Length: 354
Ligand SMILES: NC(=O)c1ccc[n+]([C@@H]2O[C@H](COP(=O)([O-])OP(=O)(O)OC[C@H]3O[C@@H](n4cnc5c(N)ncnc54)[C@H](OP(=O)(O)O)[C@@H]3O)[C@@H](O)[C@H]2O)c1
Figure (cartoon, rainbow, N blue to C red):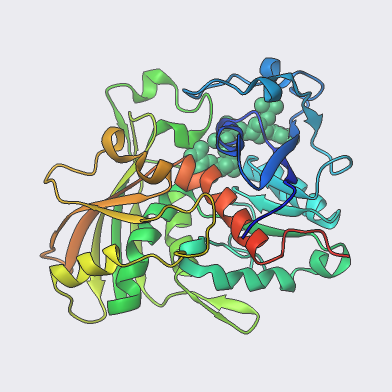
C-alpha cells in the first residue's frame, strides 16, 4: 500500500521512555509524520529538548527537539494519536481523545481488557480490530481506542501463536526476567537493582495471564472469548537495560515433535505481502545456540520487532519448554503501537470519518 501524503500524528506522553521510542521509530516513517507532542503540565509549554531527558542511543532529531510540548488536550491535536501515558492518567485522557474523534493507539493497560476495546498484535489477532465498531465514540465522533499488550505479554504470545494454531495449548507456565526500561524513567532505583533481582512487578503477572488469553481468544459476535487454557506467570525485574527474557513450559492439545514446532515458528509469516513498513519479515526467529537468546545479543533482531526463541527441549512436567526474548520498548511498546497503526491505515480505518 502507498500513502501519498504522510498522515499527521501526535504523541501523548511524548517525554517518557515509550514516548521517546515513538519519536525514534517515527523519524523518517514513510506514512506518518510527527506533528504534535504532549505530556504533563510539568512539560507543556517547554521546548521538547528541554522537557524530555533523552535516554536513547540515537540523537534526538533536531526538528523534534525544537517543537513545543502541548498540553494533553484534544484541542489542536491531530486525529491520530499514539498514547504512552501512565495507566491512571490514560484512563482519564484516552476516552477524551477518542470522544473528540481521534484514533487513539494506546500502550497503557487502562483499557486493554475492556470488552469493546481491541487488544491487538497484527500477526496474532488482526480480526479483533472489529471491536472498534462496538465503541460508542466510533458512532458519535469517529474516534476509538486500540491497545497493544504489556511488554512481557507480547513476546510470549508471538512464540505461542504458531504452536497454538497447529497443536492447541492447554497449559502455560512462564517465568520472566524483565529489563529495567520496562518501568519507565527513572524507574527502579539503581541501589535496588544493581547486582540484584526483584521478584515482584506490581500487577504484571495478572496482566500477562489475562492478556495472553484475550489475544489468543476468538472474536465471537461482539466480544472476544478468551483461549480456554490455564496459565501461570512469575514476573521478575533484573539488571538488564532493554529486552525481556522468558522461560516457558507448555502442555499442548495434541503431541508435536521438535521439528514440527520449529517448522511452526519458521513458517509463521502472517503479514507477508502486506507491506506494513514496521513488520519484520521473520517475526519469530529461532536461534540454535545452547546459550541463546540473550538480551544484549538478540533484542534488535528485525529492528527490535522480531522475537527470538531458543532452547526448545522436552519438559518433564508439561510437554515442551523454551526461552523467548523480545525488545520491551520496541516490540513491547512503541513499535507494537506503530504496527497497529499501520494495519489500521492499510484497512482504511485511520482516516477521519466523513
Ligand atoms: N517502558 C515499557 O517497556 C513499556 C512497555 C509497554 C507499555 N508501557 C506502558 O506505556 C506507558 C508509558 O510508559 P513509560 O515507560 O514511557 O513511562 P514514563 O517514562 O514514566 O513516561 C510517562 C509519560 O506520561 C506523561 N504524563 C504523566 N502524567 C501526565 C499527565 N497528568 N498528563 C499528561 N501526561 C502525563 C509524562 O510526562 P512528563 O514527562 O511531563 O511527566 C511522560 O511523558 C505506561 O502505561 C506503561 O505501562 C511501557
